[in-house]
Length: 407
Image (cartoon, rainbow, N blue to C red; front, side, top):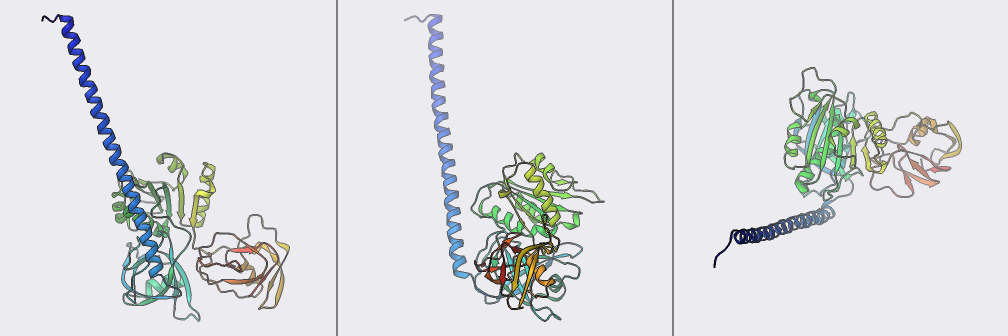
């Protein structure tokens, strides 16, 4: 049989078409295999995260405690050359396992400070990922600060401190995969050390951005630790914002000579669709929150923690004396409410009613007071975990109706 030139071309084309069909079939099989492998990996990740959550919940219920628990300071480590920030590694004195905590939560310490008639109660964020062996807090020395001076200058390795179980509403869920932006100012980095370490350990594929603000390079702590964590996941990003550094910055794209804010977010973030967590000086957080809302971020997606006491300054809409009556039952006083004093505790102090206060930010529970009649509203969401309906935290609330307090 003689095959003409046209026939040869037809045969060749048919052969090539068959090869293309075979290649396409193999490609589809390969893609299906890759997709199937990806689905298996996603499923395995979710299963592992669910197991971690279940185990954490089990351990938390098994190992948690009420009241105070004794901890030994086994390691005390200054974090910068100026020795203004120090980390304390706390091991349980009873040597029993510790319950896990939510990354971002804090410990409440009951300190016996020389020269003070009553215990000094202070809250400090946990600054490491949860482990069953120890807790870590990193504390900045505040000039004339009772608790920070006690930690820095008096307490040493081997000493014992008393603390309540981890608490607080400013935290992330370790198994969550939603993208987040963390904004730290100064020692406000401490809860984010815990958050970022946990993400790297539990959900390294989760998209997370940390913007860490400081005046100079000396203000930053755990820089190597943060950069090491960032290298563990392709979606973990750490950026340092420096406002006043005479010596120049490292020549890397994650250092910026600017204040942390929306201008930088617009430059670096793919969108504004994140949950935003902030911890740092109150003016910084207020300014960034306003700018984020102007950028289109819903208020519900902006979270911040502040351990600074509520100021005595009036509210924006403060109008002075009002028609509301405040009765301090134990002190046998009935007075007209004046909202120019800010929170209830400040007002009580002006009336000669002593309500104990420590953190001043609604976190420690020292000012917890029973409500005999009436309702309150909060100026800031309290972090104290055991607040009942008939109780209030006067350091962060104001009256909503006529109020009778057991104070």
